[in-house]
Image (cartoon, rainbow, N blue to C red; front, side, top):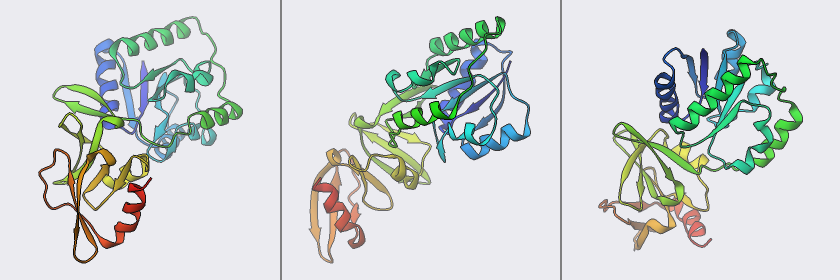
Length: 254
């Protein structure tokens, strides 16, 4: 069986690849694609694979945009962080869906469902534009709900509610949780600023994005600057510059 994985979270994509190889070593992953534009290009240049694993929210848009720009003839298993109520509308148009964090049992069940349909040549309804528009409206939650992180040889899901702050260090980006744990994430702070709920998180300087809960102290300095202390952090040099001060105060006052 030949498959492609359309997923912009590197850890999730690698987990799917690893689990597929474990479940069925004869499955070949032709490509791992991380954006709508690259997926459109791939489908335009290659024959359709036997099966597509497709995340809903990609780096440059919603994956349903792919269907608007190129013909996708392969059956699809959707990958999503959204709960079941938000994806019932497109279950009938796909083999199945997988909720993050993906488990081996759920992946195997979805593959078995695909094989049953393939064996009996059960036709899959076309994914139409009206349905896609309804789905877009239902899942139009633009903000990240959870992050997949690597812990040794394991993959863990961290909900945003459990994250105190994000920070950059030595060309890496990390999350710090309320359990006083740090994890690497596959996002820059600039990208996080686009996908995080602005009512929950705020970019205070070039190195930190923080939640309200993480702020333990604010110290007024000369020159209209603020010094910030964050829970669990031993960084004593966290400042909010003058150009960020107004938006920071507005955010605090929400």
